Image 1 (cartoon, rainbow, N blue to C red):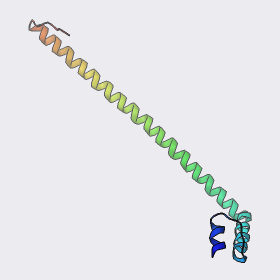
Image 2: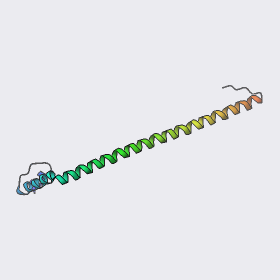
Image 3: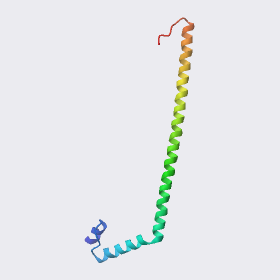
Image 4: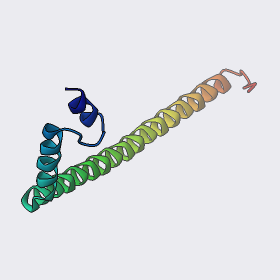
Length: 98
């Protein structure tokens, strides 16, 4: 059991069981079909990550543009209201003191 735990922790195989495990692991690593499937899986994960990042980035940029436009419209509306108030005050003989 001690040699098994040492092997699992990253040590070298030192018993019949751990040598067999090491051989089985090496065989699996060397198996071409497994490597192909693994690489295909990694490529798919990377593709999905890039697509998710690109989509999130694009949506973020679009949201920021919408927020900027909304703030611009609010600022314009406030300026228009202020100008109307200035004209109203002026029509009543009250000067703007800015």
